[in-house]
Picture 1: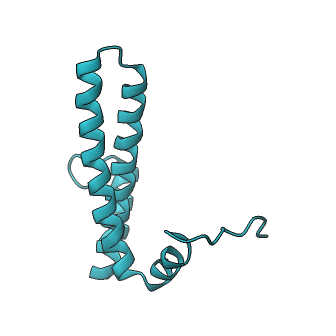
Picture 2 (picture 1 turned 60 degrees about the vertical axis):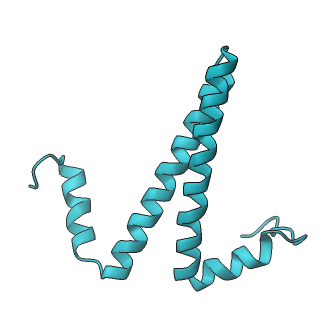
Length: 103
């Protein structure tokens, strides 16, 4: 077992070690994206609860910096994933509506 990892993390790391370089990079990008989105959500909740106007402004600034990180990682993923690129081009900044009830 690798040092500092619990059993589940160790198993996940072993699986990652078996991936191709491009698959491992994509995993890291997706993991980073989810962490950034979680941080953005946390800041949103802190902002909502914050009573101090100055502190709220600082928290909003920090949250908005995270939004830049989200977009940068998403753009990297889009460039590496043709299917995602196609979906983003179809739905972002367009009047196209996502399908309603897909089975």
